[in-house]
Image 1: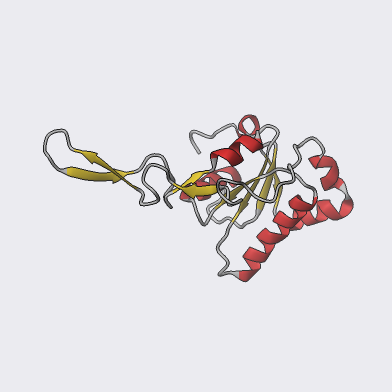
Image 2: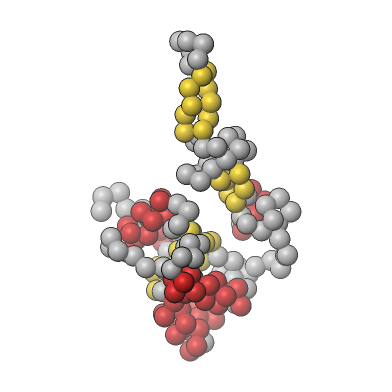
Length: 167
């Protein structure tokens, strides 16, 4: 795995949860919801990385776990893998999860973001969600459609107001 990133350094002081919003496989969706509810009950601020919405998140999790077959949800504290739903439930039941989460920042109670409505993503401001950026070809009078570099593969950008609140 050449080019491994130092996640311990990059994610110092962060709780990262890899989940999916795809609800076709009910068992997986339920497991992701259990993790969300446990972390919300502890009122911990966490970053959710959706594997259904981003191929980059899928590749990143495979790199981190060193496996091609991955299951969600997966939780990382300070860049260190804690485990899936079974491990988090066991830590929660024993009270150890509360101790581990003490140093992480708490959620500011707020009903929803004024800008994105609490979804943490919004349509790209550059391409308006089309995923295309139209630029004039300097050598002809024609326009050519290029992939927008400001948004993800779904035409979405992270909400800047939500990002400001996380820091």
